[in-house]
Length: 311
Image (cartoon, rainbow, N blue to C red):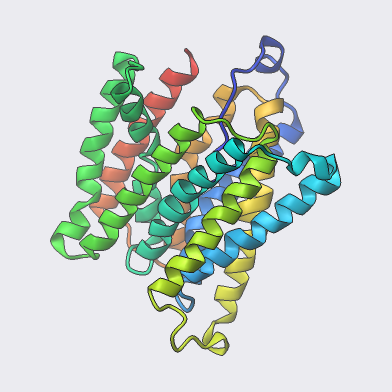
């Protein structure tokens, strides 16, 4: 899952900027890298404790991003007011600890492709939050939400039938709700002006909280790093470097260099990539609930995203 950055309306000059080869390269990175993070998480938790590994991932990524900000913009770019820092911590707890943490825990029993499809419903929950706060979305958006909810019902059927753990499915749904709340809150709170600075603090706050939760769950008891597989170590490194740094940097650059309508397509390409990788690399079964429910959810997200980006 990704760190959310509030998206400001793009000026007309940016919206009509020519789509160059660099834009397509960055977009492909976001498609593949963010879509592959679910596979990476699944490989990590095969031998590593969920919250401790996720916490280590985001602490490392946060420190690297903070160092990059200080090197690129100067140490002053890391300054934040107490209110901005508090907002970044809150958003980090919702996104990293709640949203990502529950997904990581769930993937100890839920296939990575199914997890990605359940998380794809985030735009639906954001639309519901908007409606609940008086910001009425268009009727087409609400229609997309209803269709998406039907897709979620189909996607949860493997848990109801016992094919996967229902608790894991519900954890992913809960994680997507917390991620939506964090994304929605990020657009309302006062965060550091530099989005990289804000994301670094979010990663650090969520990562530290994840380590504390892991310790509280007793994940450190009997912990033997020698038992961690090479695949898990490589996957964790991939999540730090590619998932949290390369993918995020490409996304932020795209917000400035490409039309928002094009950038927004990641929301319905990522789950397709995740399902394909899970089937190809981990031999995850493509059951009819996953194919049908996933197709319904992706279609609903297409409707919601396409409607919102034309406002």
